[in-house]
Length: 166
Length: 274
Image (cartoon, rainbow over all chains, first blue to last red; front, side, top):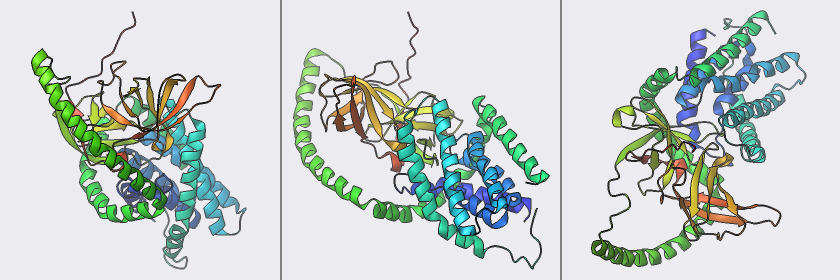
């Protein structure tokens, strides 16, 4: 896949997350479709493919979604570390691995966001952060993950065809 | 991990820290203003297209909450109709007294700027919205934002030429000096994760009951006094605690805000220590 295509997809994902997905409140939290899609991309297509998308998605979501672009980028960066787990092939089932990575990525993402709030001078109630933010956000993201994974698997390019990589 | 992957990760980490510093130094403001200007029409289209689905999903996933809310609203409606009749009578009496004594209304010259909500914070940790008015409309940092029904929404925390960011009262960084309307018990209404509000520093002896209205106290000069914040929904007292735990439900439907009013005639006061 070419850089500009990945960047464009990441930008559109950020736009959809900021304008459409943020309207959905399940268990009191907004599903992070962008994070789930990037994790699916990581599992299905690999770390090399997803890293440039993390950059564009983080900055775009920060600018469009009223957050600090640096903070969102920082919150998405643990995906790179999680990509190493994928490379190690500790779990044979890609789907199971995907669900674990979605849960881990969500915990990292929300932790960075909570840290950002605390550095801004508020939100020191860590129990509330855990019970009203991290736990429901992880549950919701894992719940929306299977259909996202299915779409990503179906959209995966044919390995026998033209090689589509950076 | 290949060398290219390591290089990308390092580059993104450095970029994140550079952007964090640039954000703190407000160097990204022109870019943010331009991005909002360019993307807000598309965001509006996407938002409107998804709203019916989102409403349906939210209703389905919160069916028990809706039922309880409906029950509470019915009880509220009955009580408010009674109070409205009484308030109308009181208003007539008050006007007669004001005419007789020459006392003026509390805020006779309040001016507002109406604005539309054009974007929302998409994270779960923060509660912020962007509104369609900015510096060019006279909006300044620190100005108070209320609903059309004049209940408190939040504070303007960042202004651009044609947009402004409003930090909602439910944001975990928000704290408003407040008092219980009936007993005048004072405290601080602070936002928390999950969009909830707690009234903190309410002494054990203070009279606070479910259903009491909570208003801004004006202490500290950050907010004008008398703006309705919400209603007490739960009070918990424990013998060993210094303060009561008071939960407050905000009156404004902050998750579905579309139009707001910016109080342009009030700017927060800063007091120097003596």
